[in-house]
Length: 111
Ligand SMILES: [Zn+2]
Image 1 (spheres, protein in one colour):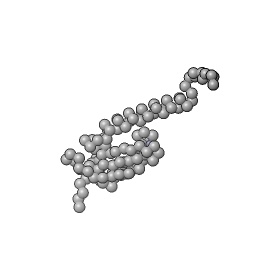
Image 2 (cartoon, protein in one colour):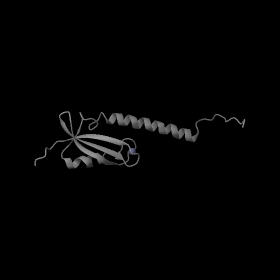
Image 3 (cartoon, rainbow, N blue to C red):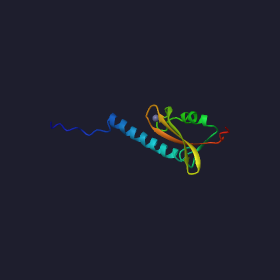
Image 4 (cartoon, protein in one colour):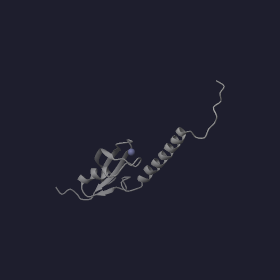
């Protein structure tokens, strides 16, 4: 005891943690922005031609937080307000971030 730890500049660990925090902030901002883009809210659905394209479309959009591929974990038809919407939830296969897309089918079912 009695040996004072010299105050150093940021250690490599502290630098890494600072970089992680910065990345987190960017990822949080990306998520907020995405809610303002098409598909991010019931008032702004992505228009999709047929129901069979809903899940492939959702899967084609990589994770907002880390850019990795996502899988569809949930897909339901919902009426929100007066709109018939598809609500698709995707989950990143790497970081586990959940994203919700609102989509509208533009071709009504003919049969
Ligand atoms: Zn991710």
